[in-house]
Length: 200
Image (cartoon, rainbow, N blue to C red):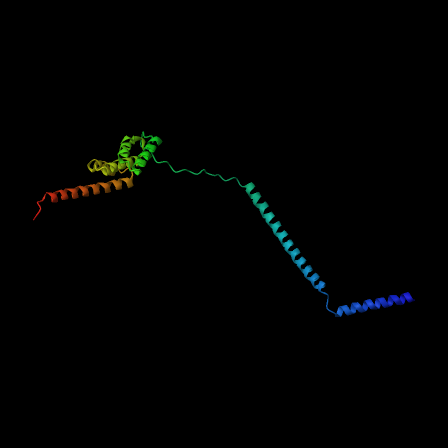
């Protein structure tokens, strides 16, 4: 009987504690437990939606791979290169001649005009492209002009301008012809002025 009484009082104490606890504020760990449970439920929903998305993407990828396997491979045309400039009949452009042209230009840049003039005259023009040929003749005339031999330069400039192998060089040659003619006219007028008797 004592044992029963003892048990009864223990149960009453426990029930009292439970009843008292039910009316009191829940402990802080319960709030944290509820928040953690809610967060886990959110993560589970996110993982399930990510899994569904992954399954959908995998299915789409399989369908695309099947379509690629069924479709014939595309025919790829190799890129076409631009057509090379036509060479005049019988012309074979020599890299050696181009190197000589560069060497002659280096002499002009070094202000060695006599040597440059000789280098331009020694070029085999038939081994050069039309543009390089026009440029070499133009530079030969320019060397003559710089050496004070404008009368010898004038026909070469005319030849380059008339040939029009390179439009830019040809227009430059025509400009040089005009400048040389103007210079000749001015020199003639100066000579006439010098011949006049000086008035006192």
